[in-house]
Image (cartoon, rainbow, N blue to C red; front, side, top):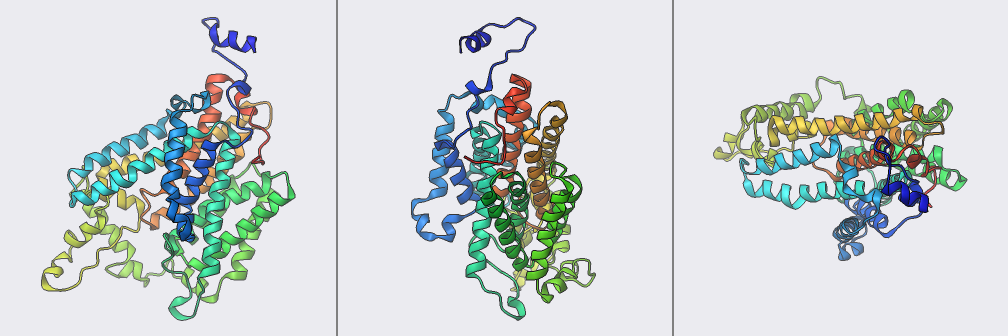
Length: 453
C-alpha cells in the first residue's frame, strides 16, 4: 500500500503515473449505484412498471434515476470520475442536446418542442452519462448488458403470454403497453447479441441455459410482431455475427445462428412469410400510398430543406405533416388529414433539428462504432485474453440492429439508443481510457468475464 501511495504522489517527469487497479477498480460485486442503474434500464427501457401496473405506484423509473444520479454525483471513487467520460461520443451527444435546445425557439409548436427536449431528452442524456459513469470495470458493463437482456426478455415473455394472435388482420401483434409491434421487434433484435454473449461467456451451465431460453423467447416475440423492418434489422445482426463476431469460435456462431433460424421456422406462419415477401414489392403500400413510409420520408426530407438550420422543432414532425405537407390544405375543406410519424429516425431528426442535427446524430452513432472498434482492436495489444473484445463485438452487433431498425422507426430520442450508447461509452472508459491512464492492468483486473456475481 505504501508503494502505491508513493507512486501516486511522486513520479519521474517522464513516467506516466501507474497504480494497481485493485485500489481503484473494485467491480467484483454489485453496489447500490449499479443496482439503481440496472433498475433504470428495467423501467426506462424495459417498461417493467407498465407490464405490472402495481409497480408504477412507486414511480420506479424516476426513483431509480434520481438515486443513481445522486449516488454517482457523490461517489468519489476514481473509476466514476466524470473526466473519464470525455470522448468524441459524449461531446457530440452534448452538442446535439445544445442544438435541440436552440431548435425549440424556431419550432412550429414551441410548447411541444419544449416538452420533448426539457421533459424527456434532457433526462435521457443525463442518464446516458450516469449509466456510463457508474461503471467501474468490465464486469459492470457485463452486468448492465444482463439488465438490458432481462428487460427485453421480460417484456417479450409478457407479450407472448398476454397477447394472443388470431386470424385475418390479427395475425400479428399491434399496440402493446408502450412499444408497438415494430418497436418491440427492434428492441428484441438489439438484445439478441447479449443473449449470444452470455450463451458463450457464462461459465455455468445454468447461465448458458438461461441465455438460450432468453434468445428463444426474444425470437418468438419477434416473429409475432410481423415486422418487416425488424426482419431487415435481424438479417443485419445475423450477418454481423456470422462474419464479424470473431470473439466467438465459428462453430458456436453457427450454432447460435441455427438456434435463431430454428425458432423462426417453427413459430412463423405462412402469413408471416407472405408479409416478408412484400418487402421489395413495388405494389406495397409503403411505396404507393400517401401515408406510406417512402412518401413520408420524401416529405420529411422536404421539411428539412425548407428549414435546413433549426428544422421544424423537436417532436414537431407530425405537426409538419398536418400543416406543411402538400395535402394539409384539405383540412380547411373539412377533409381529414393524417398527421403521420416520420417512421425513420434519420428523417425524423433531420426534419426536426435541421441538417446540423442530422449530422450530429450520425456523428454520435459513428463515433460509438469507432470507439467499439478501437476497443476490439486492443485485443492484439495485450498479452492475455482481452476481456473487452467480446463485449465490444456484442454491443456493436446490438447497435447495428438498432441502426438498421431505426431506419423504419421514429426512435431518434429513445432510451434504447442512448442506453446502448452509454454501454459503448462505458466499455471505452474502462478499456481504452483505463489503458491510456493507468496501464493495461486496469483491464485485466476485471477478468474473468462471463459472471455477474
